[in-house]
Image (cartoon, rainbow, N blue to C red):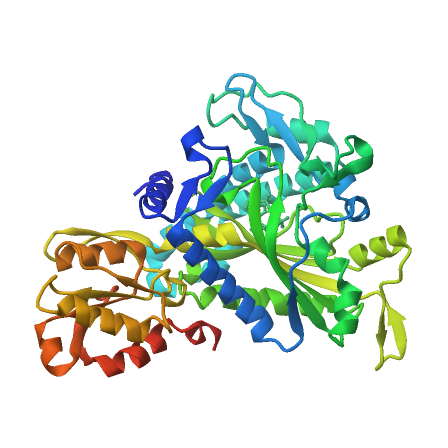
Length: 510
Ligand code: ATP
């Protein structure tokens, strides 16, 4: 299946089964905003729980907060967002489509990465297990040529974007011969900067005096509460503060479903460390985060690290974890070493000391910060798109299945009576009542068992429990596994333990 078609299928499946709807759909929707439906919000909550538990519950030196979306406007002056939270935009005069100039260039670089991958795959196919990928990459002339090209482009990106040289960015696009994917022409406008923050007015006063912003990241809510949490929680460095919450960005281009939205959710953790120790913690968190992803079993090949070409104004090291989305490898999470930039800026703008007294060193300092920042909606898309499959079964029939990691599935178990008579529905309700305190369950008695199983496969329910006539005699039921489609006969008493061992968050956290 073509990757683009795969995205379309995921979008229509998400809508058909109540995962994601276009926002205000009866008014034809609002661009780049989406609503999560009855199953989507369950899946989203489960992703949040997995992140929160692994950060807060599994680390005794990390605590969580929930700060307000509205913040004092000076926060955004201090953080640099008012002056520098910009994206360079460029328009194609023929298609009238707008693009982010840096993304156009990155997409161009991706073509060279694909060429290298293709060469490597050819080698693996030819030489099998004996093939030394690293050596091949270091010596093959085609690979080296493409690598050199990538380095040359990245160097020019660093030069131009780093110095805010917009004409240089334009020249780079022209020199690379980048064409508009829609019109196919090189008829570009100049490159302009565009601030991504949404603003509104506080209270009844209009005008600049009352101008406030919808937060473009959750991190600043953590920085301004650094001392509150440290003091009240008696936290000792190193320690972290985690937060899940909405963020808003007036994105220039927002075309890829929930990948790039104007209102989205972030899961961020700021880890406060001793100055000079930030690189150790930066590596530690890169390792921890990729482990968190790999535990889900979405396929280790679907992830790759990408070091930032252009560092943000606050960072001294930064890498992205990219995921193989239906549109290709794109940023899913960022791990940034933010130095003491933010706390120092807030000290300066607020006039308040934001320092930590380190009893071991017997001195005060402004801590350094390593942050992990992941988009909840992008994680949702990663989970949904990689779990979605159309399978052809042995009997040539087809099934759409979401092989979601069981701990994340909206429903853990569907309880079904074989028929709607002979007391089976009543017995099924009884079984449901024993399970519903531990698991999110669905009761389903409509249509044939086969149809019901397909429905549950399509929404990713890991287990279906069928109550039949034998159940009335010996209190046993059949339990069907979503992935293997195998059915086993077990006693009702065993169900809770069996299901729990497969769907519990413990399977992911241990
Ligand atoms: P991009 O380069 O794709 O615009 P970014 O580097 O600006 O992303 P960060 O500021 O590092 O993103 O934000 C941290 C995380 O928040 C990202 O890794 C991503 O998962 C998520 N995120 C950022 N912007 C959006 C958006 N518009 N819609 C959905 N998620 C987003």
